[in-house]
Image (cartoon, rainbow, N blue to C red; front, side):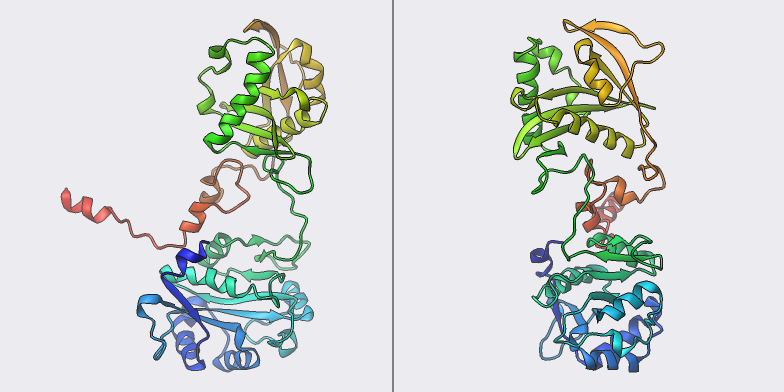
Length: 387
């Protein structure tokens, strides 16, 4: 979240116990909380850092603060983290042995409760910023969203589901801040500090210019392909991949999607990088992206001299496939049959995942972040009055 922008509208502060009790009564029914006020007082007395209050900036009076929302954290000991994920943690009455003291470094930070209606949801980002002090900066955050709104909020700010190997109970989410070996899909590995050959999906005119430069070297200059045949009118309706060796654009590839197959085409690698594995890396990335979109058949036209490469890359000739020629070269139809991706994007997936940027379905996008704002339909009322 853009904390600078959000801070213009929301303030965050440590509330008094009276304010916590008032808010607790207001939101208890909405949150479905079973914790008693005595428990809240005990937790807050043991570690005052566990509660942060939100208020709209234009209504905040430091002499008479009135909280409109809050977030409650539980800094967990190692035993507390284990109990939480193993199902032995009583959220309504957490054991004092599971809660770290204010001066102790916790093993995890558990988001105990969030009440942040409307624009106050921006206060969650400010609270995360406060949880970046040296004591907490590399501590993972854990959350469990019992309501649809809660799950949407924690997904929006960057939490991801915990798998069964990490949590004994379903429904827990984690925001990782401890060092991790992040696994990214093959089509979204650039930039990287560990891999030499990386790939990204083209999402900007600057990246598309790099693609055109690479193809101009490979096809216009080396193969004497006429410009109007190389840039054939399909570039603005396709997905392009851009391959890098280090930070240098080295290869490109184009994907076009049809009813029950995807077509991989226009693979180009700069001459100085043809002894690397860049060509295989970018084709593998293309296959993985096609699988993510639900395709199990990837079709292509291979120049006859390059058929051994495409066979090594997983393609084959097929019954009924044709040999033909265009743009002064001989080609053969080839087909790669891929295993179905069980997590392929389809109707029924999270609608916010479907509208994320191409190839970034694994990361929350700008529209995810906008979803925490309430719907105001700013032009609807005016249009209605004009009719």
